[in-house]
Image (cartoon, rainbow, N blue to C red; front, side, top):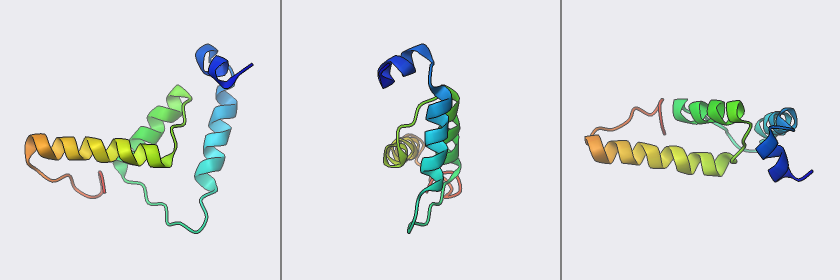
Length: 82
């Protein structure tokens, strides 16, 4: 069964969650600091059984922060998005 089939049928979610946890724990040589935006996106990914990857998550949260700042004209505190 392919990974696309696993995603569509919901099969393999335990395997995806396990791989996700291993990836989160395997960062070596880097300081991994997650703000609330990153943690929120990680929680959504875990619930949905999807793993987009750390760099993609950063792009998503950065775009959301920039969009918020552009629309409101206010800065987002660094603990919510760095």
